[in-house]
Every structure is written in C-alpha cells, then in structure tokens.
Length: 342
Image (cartoon, rainbow, N blue to C red):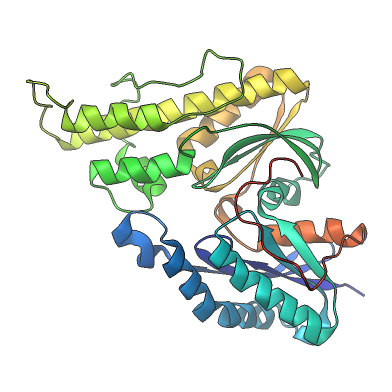
C-alpha cells in the first residue's frame, strides 16, 4: 500500500501545500502566490506576507488533499518547511503542521527549505545526484553547498550583501519594470545586447566562494540615472537602451554564478552540480549551465521550472527524513535566517 505525506510551505510569500507519495510522486501541488500583494512595494513585506498566509493556509491544504483524492486520515506524516525564512510566515506553516500532527497522531517532519530546493533536482533525476555541489539562488539566498547527501550539507560560500534575486528586484525598480524583477528583466533583455555594458562582476577573479551584487546594482543605477555631481546626463532611455541594460545586467549575474559554480566543483572534486531557487528559472542562466555541463563534462541538474520558485512539492525530501525516523516534536519552533551548516 502506498503511503502519503502532506507538505506545507510558507517560508516567504508563497502559501503552498502538496500531497506526495512515498515513491516521490507528487499527487497534487497547490501554490497561492502573493505577488499582487507585494508588487506595489517592489519586494516582500513580511507583515503582509504573514497575514496572507493566515488567510490562505487552510484552503490551500484542503485543495491539495482534494486534488490528490485523499483525506487527512490517509496521511502517514505531515511535513513543514521550518527554516530558513521570515519568522511570521514560518509560524503560520509550522503551527498548521503541528496542529495536524497532534490531532491526527501522525509524525511531524521539519524540512530545511534550502535542502528542499536542491532535492527538487533529485526528484527529476533517474539516478542519485548526491554527493554534489549545490547552488541555491533566489530572492533570499545565493549560496553554494558541499552536499554530501540530500540531508547533509555544508556551506561553501554565500553572498556578502544582496542575494541575486533581490538584485533582480531592485534593478527592475530602477528600470521601471514590474515586480517580480526576474521575469521582467528577462523579458526586457530578450532583444538586448548582453555585451553592450561592462558591468562589474565581483570576486570573479577571486578563488573565494563568495558573491556580491551590490556594486553591480550601483553601477547600473549610475548608468540609468547618472552619477551624483556629474555634468553629463545619461542618454535617453529608449526601448533598445533598456533592453541592452537588462541583458547586460543578466549576463553579469550569470557570469558570476557560473564562475563560482565551476570554482566550487574544482575545489570539492565533485562531478555533479545541483541548482535550485527562483533565479534558476532564468533562461540565460539555464543556457549557461548547459554550456558549463558540456565544457567541463559534468552532471548539471537544474530543478524544473515549476519547482524553482517556492513550492511544497519539493517537500518530498521529507520522505528521506521519514526513512531515517528523524521526526520533530510538538515544541518545534521555526528558525528564521540562514542555517550555516546542516
């Protein structure tokens, strides 16, 4: 008889739930986006996100169960992303999961959101993908990991300022493009020349596995608005100029990400690279990863588009923890922020 678990995701601004069979088949996945709520602010407002989760969590869980054709009594476990994330958002998901665990007397499993993003790569692979270098690149994270297994990871390096996805959102605001910035900049840059502007690529010649996108963002701001005190005004923002700036920005981010992935592979000696997170949906980045795969003869697995942005289906990693009997207790508290070593 197959077993089922319910996965809950509320780490940031997506309220999600999924029912996943013990062979990792996703029976049904539901994601309720809050993009429209945060669009006017150009980014996620934590208090608004938490309130939206409160309104949506139960309907989303109900939709996931109905779509899978099962009831709560059919569940073998309930899993929830408990870290990292926004504390108010996390609390909503964790409270819902703890309640279901208590009432229905089923195991509670705490998921690491970062591990889940990378496990999405395993979900679409026909063979084991770990050990591997893992890159999680999103609005809140730009981190490289030494992934010894699906649930054993050590941080290799991270951004010292903005995450890549955060930089996309901020640059979109500078360019007058809608939120979220990733899809907007990709669309704007489709007909642009990625070599039109030589934007900075921080640490690209440094062996240190670190990222920085603040200088890139500032350089673009000066290109668009001019430098303070400068006599010369920037050229008119024509559609082609906008396309060139967007494409050049994208290329600068991609060049840094690819370089650091290649460095991490050399430093660890791994021949496998796993990539997850919202920025992994970027078409220019995905093309560059394919080029890296061919050039270096490595395995490179990117999470499918539907699993790049936050979702509960990647909570299938909970079955790994279930098999290890790594269950959480009902005094589980969410842990915001980044966990350095897990």
